[in-house]
Length: 384
Image (cartoon, rainbow, N blue to C red; front, side, top):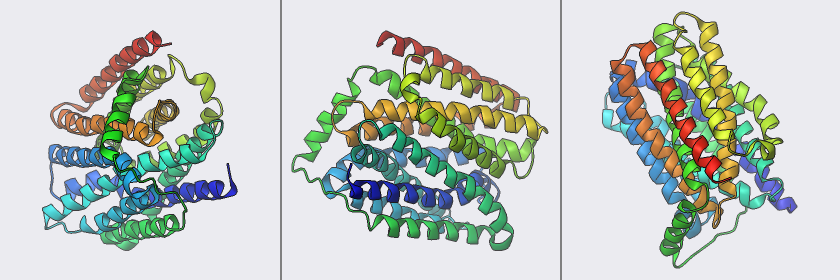
């Protein structure tokens, strides 16, 4: 790995950190903002998040072809520019179409940025260091998630919603400027459509790919619970600052635990990594089901979720980096399937939460994670 490659890697890591500060100034309160300021029901919020998830899926699916066509740097810059525009649009509370448009641009940009940045990191790092740099990327992202909500709590009384959304856009302008100095090769391909199609097929038919895709879809669906249901449940049944506290606690645990897992991931990858992580998520849902008016138990549930999240997402990233063919296509496929699971999860879980008692909802979510863990274990064990 050259000095230039290392420089580019660290610029990417800093960019992920800065952009997540901007995102998580707003994301912890977004569902609450849409419900209380935008006047939406929880089901309507879930519908919007589902549409956002589908656009995120579209961005992820297109990221491989876009990076091959115009280059990874230009793809990263375009994805960041979408979010610079998206956050201010969300402030037009009297124009629902602009709120929808702003949210959709934010998620579309995220869909393009995440797999592209991961594939660039995997390509620049050596085989022996890719897991470490992917873990550092996750740590940088979650460090931003720690600072973003905390900064949001401090700035919200001073700036209000307009200030928070505008500040988020400003952070993405900084990230855009940092990415603009990265030097990455353009990878033109006159037959990009056929190449990408064949690359997707190769990924889908790779050994163990179906279990990997199932874990990816479930992981994003569970993130939908964390981003939509947990904030609204927390405000209604735990404490007013529950959304920010949950995101801060989650990101802190993830950041601290990430390094430990990263340097042991080779020993953890096997038939048990994903299923064990899913059982952590199931246990977290069970704990949160009993946390009404109990911030400590609510926080404990978030901690359990966080441990499961670390193991699940890092295992998915490392497995994806080892799939055959183009790294860009591999991350595009796995992330796309994950985002499709997230889009379905937002719609299904938000509708269930709107119609079920909180305890019944959390127990249902726990049972779903146990079922998926069993299926993933059987599939992974069959390919050992």
